[in-house]
Amino acid sequence: MNKITNYLKVLNIFFILILLSSCNEEFNFNKRDKNNDPIINSQRSNTKDKLEITISCNEESIEEYLKDGWKIKDKTSREKVCSWKSTPANSTCDIEKDKGCKIIKPASFGNESIYLLEK
Image (cartoon, rainbow, N blue to C red; front, side):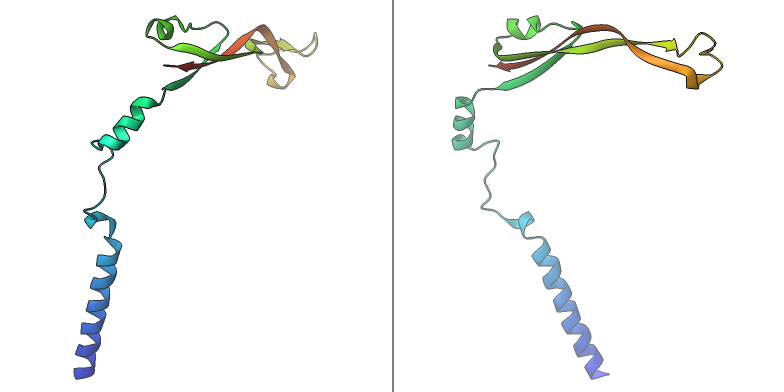
């Protein structure tokens, strides 16, 4: 009986040590608070904010960003399909009844512009 109680005591101590070692980060009082640290905040003010905006098929405009003080750093454009249409594969095909004979083709093309903005 005495061996069992000694074994349980050692097991309890071992369990407590594991529990405390897993909480190491919770009790680290020397850790800096990144939001209130003057060193980090001063470095943040020196860096520029960057934003990437993608506009497809002239759906939007970046005028609001430009009015807000953003400047265009880089712009890339490429052609993109804006809408698709379904057509029958042959003259005897009924798209509503037979879905297997439907061919999907591009209906209209437009541009996709990717803007890299900087403030």
